[in-house]
Image (cartoon, rainbow, N blue to C red; front, top):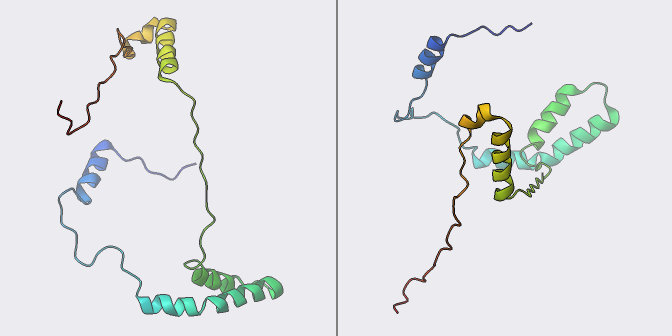
Length: 136
């Protein structure tokens, strides 16, 4: 059971117009504020204390949730997150993709009007590249 209320299209449009619009000036003083260097330095000095608290909690805890959260709050800015690696590999060729499009068009004539055939009628001529500055 969802508690989300249904919003009409008119209401959505009205809400869009109330928000920040392109070309509007930014409100002075709004946005993220830089963390002062003094605060960063003070937190950096307390990092080892936070580590000590976490170690104490890990070793001697009897439900020290507040202490763990406070220690984690101070450690988060100084301990980097684990690196994530994303490898993307694709083995698609344009010719195969065009063949699949054409096959789909042949298989279902009803949807043929929805597919635009972009297969060139003739071979595309090779481009001739002339280096700049060469006067022949």
